[in-house]
Length: 467
Image 1: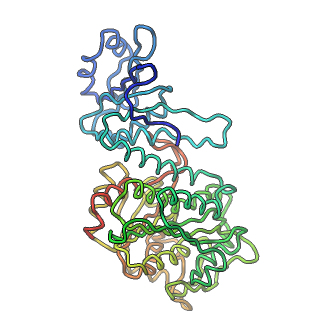
Image 2: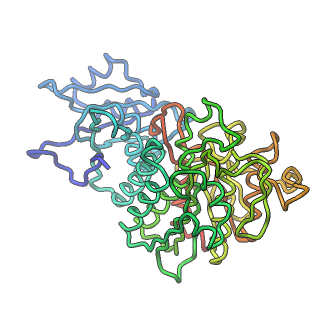
Image 3: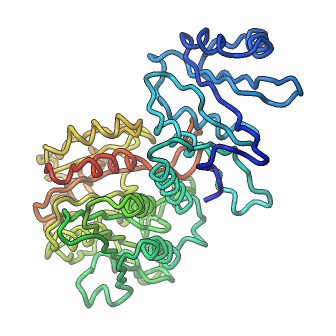
């Protein structure tokens, strides 16, 4: 990750960093009163009122920048909270800055994280790379954790943004391996026909038509005496839709169909970097859903690791198949909780849009704390029901179930399908889009991580011990 933070207060030759005063309208008078006459006069000339999006670079006597005034609007209009600092890191010129003043209702650590989230651009394929302004974290008690969280989010974004010719199953496995080895995790991989030998038939079926073999990547880390947490990710590195092939417009963004695996990798990185008291088990079900003579077909009946048979209604409902085998494996090791992430359904986007992911759980006690922590860090999710009567939509006359239930309640039927493979273990399912269609402060357009910062804080607080 490029340098966007520093822990020392002084810049080169002892030069002080540039202060930033982040203001609401009712903060402005107090902030201006502490400035010099030239700065006050300049701010008034620019009509700085603390309104959302306002930014004034204050001059010094020699013409350089002596400080920055940034407006974020009134509290009741503030949907992004301290993540708004991402607007500054993406827009300010290069230099070293400090957050000298922030609204009293903001958390300082979150403001620093917001800065880091905004200081991102996927430019590895461009001739010129962007250099971002640097924020001083001197005096922050949680400086290392702030950097770890931002680094994990950037990694997840990079994985999603990478084009599919460079992020196939082999590359995604390599990325998971590199991340795990950094923290001394144990990593194992089952590939190709070994998936059949070791009873992962649905992962194999989905990926067998591709030129790179499907695989299950597993990572183990942590003290065995700590609560066991399984994190599963859908890793479809490109989704053609299979025999039920996608339209051109639908296929255009299918490099992001491994976004669930990217979420799993990023959360695992946060947990290990933060040395949380967790026995971590990460499982990535990786495949490319391609079309060839070997592709699985509508009407096929697949076996599953759980012993249940699945009639294929639509080959474009493949993510739930690979996750089904991974969740079954995770449940066999008796976890306290299983969490899965998947770019699973368009129905979730129709219901809640691209940036508010639904989450489902079979453990009611987890709902309130997850909502609490995700809201507190401005990383919201929305609880959706596992409405059991809709299982009838997945009924098959010749198999235990179908893999798709038609046009109604698609994100619910997908979650109900996955529930059949968790073997009654506590479980959460996040149907994430993995993508920002438009840029917001702290959230550049392109690959994105959802819910992870809130889940990290919940796990860190001992949430697994309260299930």
